[in-house]
Amino acid sequence: MDDEALCAEIARHFWFHSIELRPGIVTPGLKTPEIMRAEEEVLLGSFDLSGLSVLDIGAWNGGFSLAALRRGAGRVLATDSFTWDAPHFRGRETFDLACAASGLRPEARHLDPTELPAGLEPFDLVLFLGVFYHLRDPIPVVEALGQVTRQVLLLETHQDALEEKRPAMIFYPGDELVGDATNWWGPNPPLILHLLLQAGFDRVMHRPHPIFGASRGLYAAFRPGASPALRDALPAPWAEMSPA
Image (tube, rainbow, N blue to C red; front, side, top):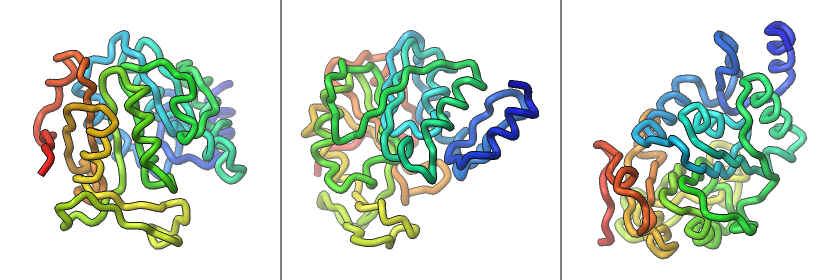
């Protein structure tokens, strides 16, 4: 597909991720190139992904799946269900288009997060970005994340109840959060910490989002067997969390 045809095909679809598919050709994602660059650098930039296996849960257009491959991951499995199935998103079509246009080929599997562990072997690095608050019952899914993570889990989520020191979540019964009725929960950092510890992770790092600040939190959770190269890779303002 030449560049003109590719641009025409890109324009036929809705995009959440801004992805540079070829030099000068970037998908018009709601998540801007600035946000994508900042998140990729903060989440992946400190880790040497060479040869590692990566599981991307909720991959949507595949922006972070492709980023992991570009950064040397040995194997990437992208999974999704809601955005890949929804006719107004046509997410699987955009994922396939991004892969074909970029020449990068992550594996893909139709999988809802509630189906985890779904027979998957553990992956060195698991991405769980912008998924937690869309789950009506996120706790069993977090427990399953411990089963599919060999070394490190990277989790990004909307946050709420930041003034509360106890583990807590705010429930949104309607579309109170940015007009999206699929946004159910606003967890606070102590809640995420304790869920991750109960899921078998023994070290949890946290930092605010590089663009949106404390309204969204980034977490790196390490399994007991994670390599020192991964466990000690994150610089400030990443900070280790501890139970109160």
